[in-house]
Image 1: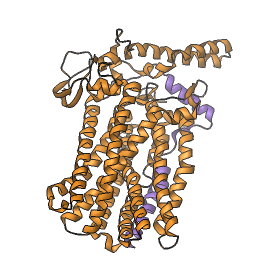
Image 2: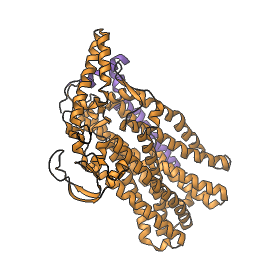
Image 3: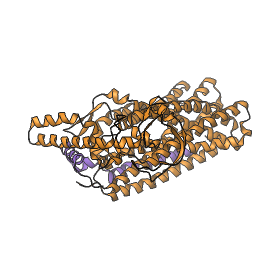
Image 4: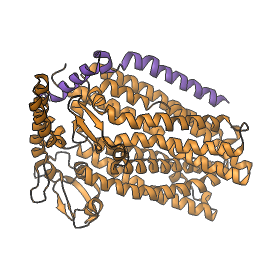
Length: 511
Length: 56
């Protein structure tokens, strides 16, 4: 056993996981949203019987297929990494993750895969109605797959519905429904899927704008824009509501993440929201430096966002690190003491079991129950270790929100001029529509950077830091596989973009 | 359909690399490989999570 933690190895394992997850998330949101858009297009075709809509449906279905084919199974690599790089974590959460991932495999994946075959290869082989049904099932199946993964991630952010088994060193599920319907899991699912709908709408609108700029396939482009812009606007509205709910649950369940994403060091009542700012990277918890080199604030908005009350108190990083008795905020310093007691009780329990001291084991187990919620803090050496990287969390949040605010405005303008019939003459808007495609990906990725970096230092929030969740491997082993993935992912990304670009250039006629 | 053939080729090559090379040679399951039963695995994880000091 490696007795000392090699932080370089942990960080390479984290980098590898981040690389894989971010690469995987290039494909997933487009699949989630484009599957529904294709279903909308095909529904119009079946309803109207107009062959132009069929041609349009098949074109977008081809792009959906390219994205699906190149992205398929990239998520499985994450599971490889769990077993190899994160074996302590895998062992400890096996009972919790087993259920949602099994449900995903049995129901969602097979639902998706079965109807996927009919959708792609069933044209002229099955009835129009059954084909359309299959397309809808692919859309629902894809999104159902996402549900189970996001439930698992939601549990990592807010572990609930379980107990820790002191004999097996595993978290065991006590209440499946509590895990499934945890507020964090629900807000994760609704926010991530709706952001996928928005991204896919931007994708369809952006490519259609490119056709209009080049005066090609204009009828198809205009029809696609109408459907995708309406879907995108509805999705954007939903993204705003689910984003608000996600921020609220973060404030309630992960106050340190909220403080980091707003760069809030000193908690206050009527806390302002930093709309934009430049973080002072030299700032540390507890010092007197200004956390910002520059900031634009909106008074009271953070309190409203966090607690639904514009006058309420929002704890800052300093409060959460050092504690704030007046506001009854327990700091990391106090939690570290309790966490160390929890760890000591774990050892006492194990020793008592080993020596056959049943009474001692029971006493340690009962005492442990009072400290178990602080378990993870026992691994921290100083309170400031409980703080996630503030700069990255802050910028990821603000990039997501600022880019996300642009999309509904652009979609609204595009829809307005399309309905008026003069969209093609507003070339600047067409360029803006195209620009929104990469911006959509940036926004989507920033959302996950916020979710995962903001959770640090934890693999399981408050219970297991990443430094304990990892395996006892050498840095070289993890670095090697990181480089292999980097090469494979780069190749696949080049393949995705080049095949996609070629197919877009060919357009619908050749399909 | 040319693009279809290309995509099938990418899928098969990718799955081969993932399951026949990466999983087999680079991503063994750490606990399955190094320990023979669940008791040993639990003991190993327990030892890891209860170690007193961490050198950072």
